[in-house]
Image 1 (cartoon, rainbow, N blue to C red):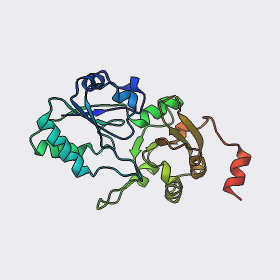
Image 2 (image 1 turned 60 degrees about the horizontal axis):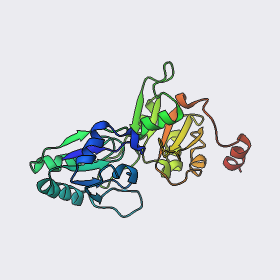
Image 3 (image 1 turned 90 degrees about the vertical axis):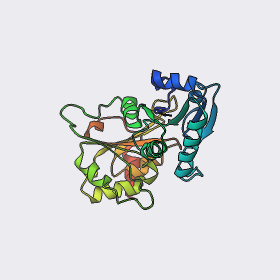
Image 4 (image 1 turned 60 degrees about the vertical axis):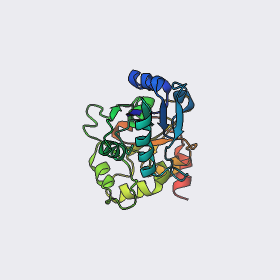
Length: 247
């Protein structure tokens, strides 16, 4: 069984190992956001969509786990294809633990995670010398029955933050961080469809985050936050922002 990172979207950002395994796979269980161009590299395999997207019907994790185990007993090469890197906000632990418990060997193939694709998209180093020595990757999402997240404290403490799966909660994120002491004027960038031809980048400040999030077009988006963003382009005029933020 192979847990393979599909990267941020662009097919040519797949690792060589990932592309080889897709070409050899008998069956591929893939996330919802994996593009057809990537799946086409596995031309002869059976393809099963099992991914999750917020607000949409998706397979329960325990059902996915069982299907993976059943497939591993039946097929020679089984690929579980996950967006980004499997080991970062990809629920890899649940799948690995279940498979190992049932005597199935698992190999993980890394992928390019969204934060690194987003920083490349805007040409900003997340650890720019003199501006950032700490980086945190967080998500505000908390599953049912899980312990309370400390994402706010992590972002406040870090020089640079990458916030996954948060664009739809922009207002709540901005309010929580400002209430915790993050300056209103902290620079932010919203990067949508990083690495793809239809990428969309919006700049502003933490205070403006709910407004600039309205400019997203429905694709997967990541929030980058910190002084390393300062000086990057802006998509809204100061006059427009003044009208919208202070009616």
